[in-house]
Length: 201
Ligand SMILES: C[S@@+](CC[C@H](N)C(=O)[O-])C[C@H]1O[C@@H](n2cnc3c(N)ncnc32)[C@H](O)[C@@H]1O
Image 1 (cartoon, rainbow, N blue to C red):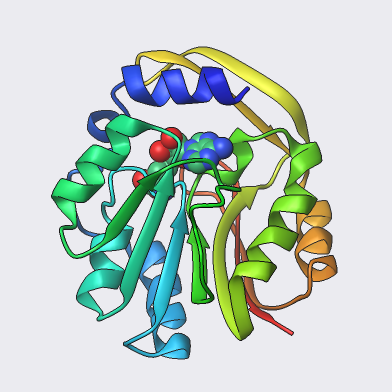
Image 2 (cartoon, protein in one colour):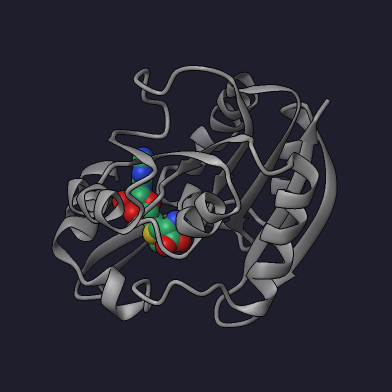
């Protein structure tokens, strides 16, 4: 799945198709990101897993004063993120990359976790918890539908794959990984997603 996803983002036109060059967050996303920023405070260390091209989120958090680190499996996206958000640190790598070191005040991940097999989601949430200081926060977009593995031949011009549990199971996984949910929202804007803002116990 990882090979297909990496190739899809390296060869597809995600940035153009999803208007990621437009640095503004929509009102729904802004509300959640503002809440995270207010809870963590301006100077926090923030990690973005599956950061894409760094827009709009990493630029937003960087402008709020956060020290931003992003990691993404697509070398093309990382190269663009470095250009789009010069103050950030961006690495080519997997969500589990050992090159990501240190303790963060917040870990975010938008529209990315459902690109690895769902059997790995529990371990990933535990890994996220291990990267956070006690009381640290997460803001994640997870899937909201039960989907073992779905493949599209044409997602922004290239093949792509997704895998997710439903919203109830995802909420349970977040809690079992050691987080207290603060705000959970199902998003019906275009596709169904589960947004979770939570605090490490
Ligand atoms: C839908 S895009 C979202 C990008 C960005 N978060 C945004 O919202 O614009 C998903 C991103 O996750 C990255 N990704 C997928 N699987 C990954 C993995 N196993 N490790 C790191 N990044 C991954 C992709 O390369 C892609 O940039």
